[in-house]
Amino acid sequence: MSLTTNDVNKIAHLARLGIDSQDTESYAKDLSGILDLMTQMSELNTDKVEPMAHPMDQAQRLRHDNITEKNNRDKFMSIAPQTEDGLFLVPKVIE
Image (cartoon, rainbow, N blue to C red; front, side, top):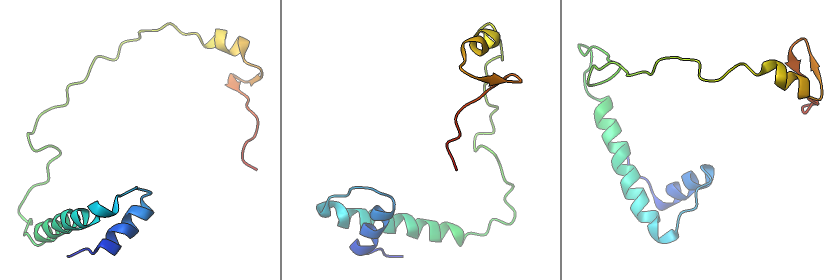
């Protein structure tokens, strides 16, 4: 798929991106290359390929879920302008 400079300008406008007019042709070439690669990839037969979550098949390293701060809920509720049933009351913003 080949994108024109007009296509790039439309995409940039929709994405609210500022692109210099001198770079538009370069962006059109790069984006066209990406879309061509996606077209090639979609034509591949992946019927016998098993889906995987990560190409390296590694586990995610997670930190221990330890409590590091004390519970200040009652303190914060006592200084809040308005509370009800353990909730903070705020002004209605959406009509």
